[in-house]
Length: 159
Image (cartoon, rainbow, N blue to C red; front, side, top):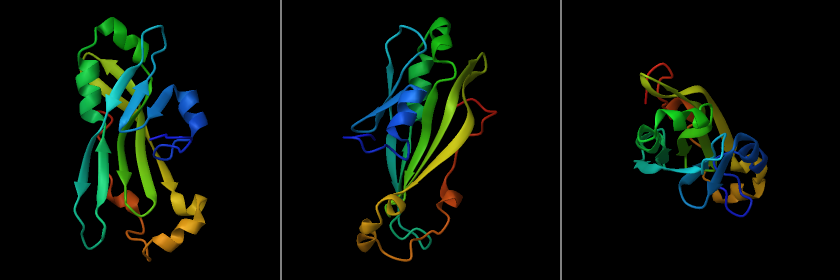
């Protein structure tokens, strides 16, 4: 999350402002509509995956899916049009070694349900931006490819 200028899960401040997504301390995100409606707050459920052979520290997974379904499932269809195409986080992964991965997508509403389309992944490696922190990190950093351990909902299915 963005606290005192630190970007939340690989999303820079300028990207947040351009995308109408504003992060706050804690695990909440404000989604601004394309109209005069007030912004809405998404909350994340955070789970810790236990350590394993390939993930010696385990990892934290934050999911915004339940909050998206609950919140937008209560809205009137007219209101949903104002949030169509809003950039939202789906899942965020912290591998507890300086690497953060966030999966984002765009809201789409239809009679079949709520969809998040055009998924893209943002990766932040704190050691690339702050190499002095390497002295506090165990080496080698495992897994070498953390993208193998993330999951996303299928775009063609409603949440």
